[in-house]
Image 1: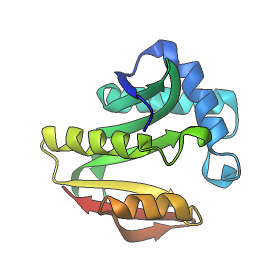
Image 2 (image 1 turned 180 degrees about the horizontal axis):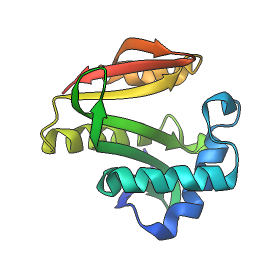
Image 3 (image 1 turned 180 degrees about the vertical axis):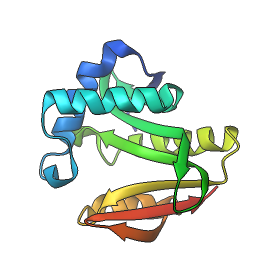
Length: 155
């Protein structure tokens, strides 16, 4: 694994996050925001939801990944507050090097520190690599809406 440094979200990284997000969703655009302004609005929404839960991964001072973990999410399906992973992105040339796993471990730890008992996320139904990744962390498929699969995990 390359030497990865983790940093808390700062506004100065938004443009780099937008670029990273748009690049990461190439081939999966059906599940993504498509333009720079829409993506920037989405990242600002993530920031407003739970700024503390956004963690950035850097290699050689270059942003290569991030996770947006929301400890304030109210799950209508669960009828309670859960930890929601809204986004997990790693640059293509840095995948399969442990960066996504490191980010996910930190997010799940964050949820536990916040006293949450369950985590959830939604993943595109044809994003097989992501589904396999989440299953390694104990997430199980637990519902569907259109082309989204809901996955949950007890913490």
